[in-house]
Image 1 (spheres, rainbow, N blue to C red):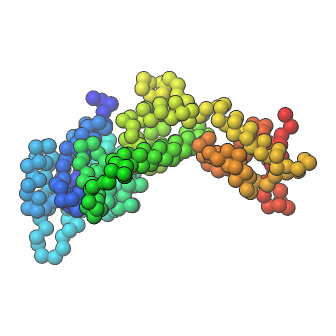
Image 2: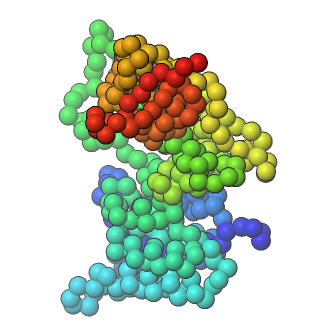
Image 3: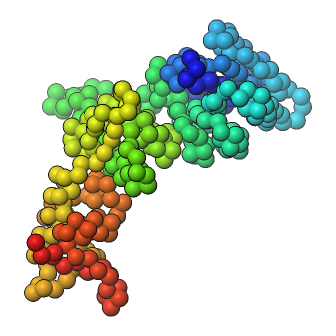
Length: 356
């Protein structure tokens, strides 16, 4: 238990309940998916929800059964007091951060960007902050401020209603037409494959950056934390994988990364293939430069990438871990495939084939 994260949970209940009601077809908010997601991340020692509960009388019982402390913030005193619950919640969170040093993680359940300063202050106090909000009612400013952000709509156990646009057309396909389900499944599979390709590029770039910035090995857990720092909304489940390890094994099977035994069980080391695709790509670059260079001439960097894609349409330097085509060419020059130099007269880099 000493190694478990202690979690304090704060719910801006009006924001969550109205967000679910507005964007989930009038369905009520369900606390259980949030509780389950947090149980996987640590031990929740504080659970508080803030609202004028006279507006959410039916929800009291559901939250009380889940051991959530209900903080009453009346809203009926004349002029607007809509920020009263927000202020009380922020004050309580900061107070708890100072008084309970053993609490390592704060979960702020809201989509309101007004809580962004609170998130920054908690992180300044060396607290990990997880945000939770309804996707369509969450401000774009809030997720990047958190260490991790969970969209309520994507949590296990949340029943998201189908798009309302489907009602505009009767559901009677003619025998000559393909079944709508098969068309939807095919489109979904293609979209998922494209998403995984995009994720592979981001993951390879992250591994390459971590390898370049430190001399230590890159473990799967460190890689996951780095991906969350880049995109706090990242979740491998959005790409169809149950765990991050399953995602890494999938990419390793496609020679995107290599896995080796790490310092701890279940936390392998992740690296980029040293040979294989990189050497093939360097060879492709050299052959294209040889074909384009006339009588010992040089080839300009500008437009060279298009020439490589004509020879190999699936070429992408980003899949190899390089952030730019210039960085890829510099690596090829270091590897002895080509020579690379800057030409002030041409205002461009020039490449010539390296003599074997």
